[in-house]
Image 1: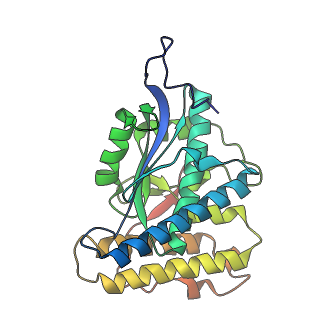
Image 2 (image 1 turned 90 degrees about the vertical axis):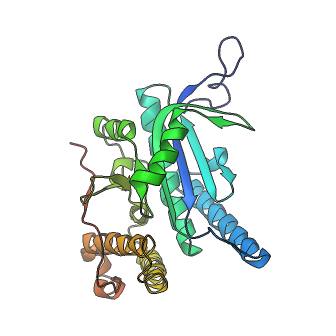
Length: 278
């Protein structure tokens, strides 16, 4: 992968923009007045989720520390990888999409959901400063295209995904197979539950994650029923959850009845399909 220590310096040693894959992620449900106890509890859960995600990424990569360039500010997260050529862009998106999958699963276990976007463009970062069109676009898409608890891709990232050949990452699926399409609006987003396919024989893990996912969604559906702008997020999650369970029905039924994993939602949102690289 591109040396991130040098890509932001020009030949003259001055700061320079570089092509990067950039993630902007926003934890949802944390706005509004909160007392000290709530703030500290949220901090504990967030740190636990990130720690778990880092461990999962290291296990998948044989010890590589993927999230070493993560920067938190309030409830927002920025992660980037250098992408100075076509091969670098493929590698950067591969790493970032896997990071996102493990992050969202880590948040799930702490009853947190996130929304965000990935953009491929010029970017600059140092220990104190983040800047550039890639970050600007990721922030904009998080507010506009993402809409629901999902991490969407910008057009440049989607183009790389379509042009790149699919190669397996160790024993894991290709990174393109961790992408999904929302047929309702055409948005391409990270299929974070798809990270479970890295452990195809561990059906206990599948069951525990899907039960936790179902519980989080059903709790949100009851809590925000009738509250515009909030209930839709959980109705969308209900649709995505049911899509994933239905897609892996034949595998799940070896352990339990998939019907037991379906979210109880009278009006789930969304129609989904795997990302097509053809």
